[in-house]
Image (tube, rainbow, N blue to C red; front, side, top):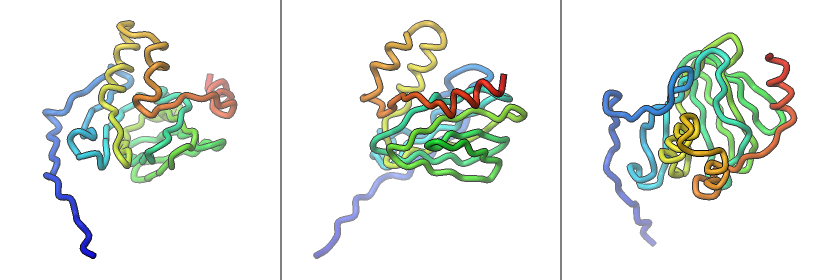
Length: 166
């Protein structure tokens, strides 16, 4: 039996051509979405100012999420534990694992985030930007959970940790 291998075109994203959403202290550079990669993966670079929040506790049903630290430090909730990842570190969060992230209280964070297999994320990040500008509501975000496979949950560990930072 011969296995059929599907071929795809290479994907090159020039920094000057990548779309960026958000505003300081949180910028997200949209690199490759599933429509570009044939569903293999999606990726974005997220830059957070010192202590800035990234994502609230959530999980994905179909994708692993990889965090590769380009610079700084990132606090990441993984299940019931909070780990700090630093420049050069990589963390992979498997499907169905609750996670959240933010820059460390004493450091900015610059992180490459990759979803495997890919999931449409660009419109999710655009929606987050609209919520931030008041052009969409938190309810719109909650209504999009199935579409973007981004399911928000409560995390007492994350909530307590945030309180201790104030």
